Length: 172
Image (cartoon, rainbow, N blue to C red; front, top):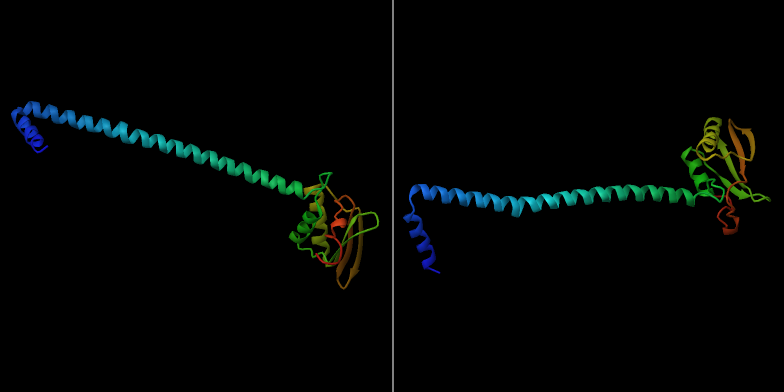
């Protein structure tokens, strides 16, 4: 092995300047070829594959989020496609309405009791239920007390959850 570099050096010195230039140019071109096809091309392929994989994963994540949202809506709806009790209570809370009581009447309708509410948020919430979910109250009893409204609103289109005890009692 020791003699190999010495023999290459002797061979190199034996070449004239024109041959040395040609051999050096050929080695540079060979190195550029190896760099291009052995390093850059596989890296470009890996980059493109990673980008495509990321795009697929992002599209899948978006689709899963959409399906999860639909599943959540399905879980919150009854057999007729109406919002369930939880969705109704959440929409009331989002509208700034504090439901103080909830119960089932003798016909199985969900009755929500609201002790103090102003008319604007109440009717905006009811209009939102009609617009967003396509439902309205089946019964509505309103009394004015101390500058606010006391309301009992009944929805007989919601799923019956009385058997689970989820709507019994007076807490929201």
